[in-house]
Image (tube, rainbow, N blue to C red; front, side, top):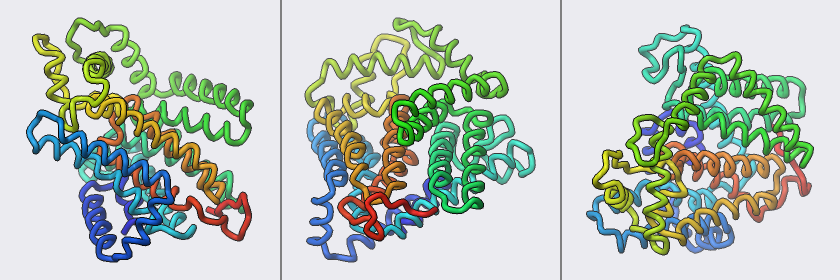
Amino acid sequence: MALALGLSIPVSTALDNLLLLLVGLLWLASGRFADKWACIRQNPVAVTAVLLFAWLLIGMSYATVPLSERIGMLNKYHELLLVPMLVTLLRTPQERRMALAFFAAAMGVTLIASYGIALEALPSLILAEGMPGNPVVFKRQITHNFFMAFAAFLFAVWALEARTPGKRVIFWAAALLAAANVLFMVQGRTGYVVMAALIALLFFERLRLKGVIAAAVLVGVLFTGAYGVSQNFKSRIDLAVQEAMAWRPDEAQSSSIGWRLEYLTNSVAVFVRHPILGVGTGGFHQAYAEQVAGTEKERTHNPHNEYLMIAVQVGLPGLALLLLLFGTQLRLAAGLPDATDRLLARGVVLAVATGSLFNSFLLDHAEGLFYAWASGVLFSALGQRPPGGAANAAQEP
């Protein structure tokens, strides 16, 4: 069930919820809680995820909104508890490899369907989200491009690690098609930034400082080419620049970038007034509404920035725990026994941490679940010996 989440996360929220329920019930029914607790205690990533959730739980106690709103907000972060569950369930390299293969398969289907929609080869009634000018499939454009950017990274990593020419060609082709889908076809701007960050990581891991320079050149060439060739990419970049230049802090906004800048400035103002403990779990909407009272500015439930979402609700300790979680993962990724897992683990953290600058990714269902699932899958290997005893073993895709 835990492995199958890799297949469902990019595809179906309903299936996600069913699988999460089954995983939770089976985890409880299987007993051996002393062994599970010992496993969790020895995994700093799992412990930090639990601490962040626990602090959000404590944050419910001093929020002033109705209890239903506090519970509703806490429930949006329940995926954090999947991390400790998965580190007790996935104990072999084969299980981790299969979990990633499920995700890759789902993204492969998504990629084929997206090209089918773009080429008008698939009936639009089958895939309600998509249209030729913006061929998303199972998710909306932000989520689609985020997942596809990570899929391109995953395929590229597998291509680099592949031991046969045939696999290498297949994975490179998949990586290039996925990257083209992000840059030239689908309109989600978050995916552009996430893919640039993942390219930089890939080159840095291979070439260190020279890799950063090479990545900067490659990203510059790719984005310049996309701007010149892709009307989708050009229109999204031009619109973002136009909306950013039109933003005025004292005026109500009516554009995507304008709203984000408005949410940013007002959320920071709320945080400055409540820096220590925040306004409590579930209290963001009420506090934000009070901040913009007497103006025509929109009352939002979501600042589209995970760092602000956490900081406003549960203060500096909550923000510190979120940063500690990301930092712990980046630090401990070096201790994973498999070279491919080390790179993919850093990629997961970098992708989510980058995307969280523009979206509340842990709050959002698909992205938050992906983060928790991928973290549990990859960091379940902490403390295990490399396969075959090799210190730098790399799994064969």
